Image (tube, rainbow, N blue to C red; front, side, top):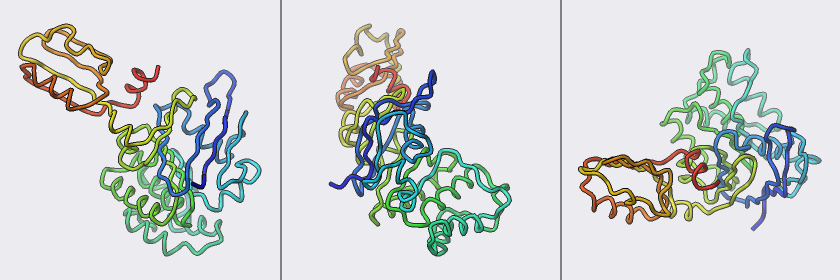
Length: 292
């Protein structure tokens, strides 16, 4: 497989503040690759260092086989980037900004920009200053995709988008991937990554703690469980290697579960259950209890 992104011991230090250290992984051509971790884990720092917006302290990174620092301008021609937060020329209208963006790539991107705006429900006649945060995010998405990049880098792209627009956004990403684009998707929302990505790199406190296939992540999926039984639950009933953050008092118990959900449901069924609630835990909860 041809590598599109290659990170080798990539390090960015801010002195006393946390950065990233020795981050190493590869993203293959045509892959949808997730990059997850709690807020503050170093995801944005990694991306900005990868895009030569920050100077690395150590290690190196390549995109399309080219050095990310030395050949940054050449790499940028075929990369679409949606930052977690973006600032635009407020006095410009959306159509003016998109036309300006297309001109930077020396391409006629109007047809694709119009199609993307239609799909996302973005009014090109409005001024940037009048847009909500969600609509500004739409502008960023269109600007990143209008030149049909070979690599799409997304940093928390769904923030500010309502659920219906998020669905449309993922449909657009799927179309771009079918076209041949490689997608690098950074998020702190596990469900987004599980639905869309093939593999995922997991970052905590600036350190890469693993690269995992989504199939494996799903098979050993995490669940946050809350149970109310009709009678007091035995003290050690849920004390297994698959349960963490166990909080139990009388007939109530809550914990984070990793493992076969069928086994969990069988165990719950043996109790006289009055109420049970199973949901996806936050990534912060997962990292706290499984990646210490």
